[in-house]
Image (cartoon, rainbow, N blue to C red):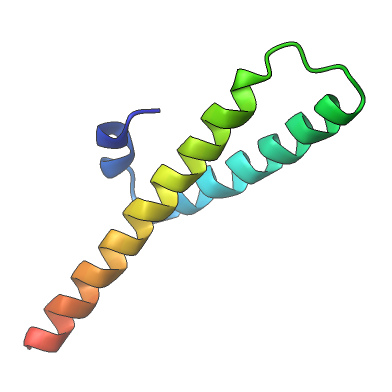
Length: 71
């Protein structure tokens, strides 16, 4: 998922994406441990998607704090 797509999501959708990503990462790690994982690059992609979502959440929080501090 691209960062510009993530920026368009609502706060609730971001939280849901992080939860889904973490669940998928858990399953991928489990598959890797049991030698059932075919596409090992998927683990890296899921980690990056989670990080992008968390980055956007942090940016939104900081923007909200900045706005509240200015008032």
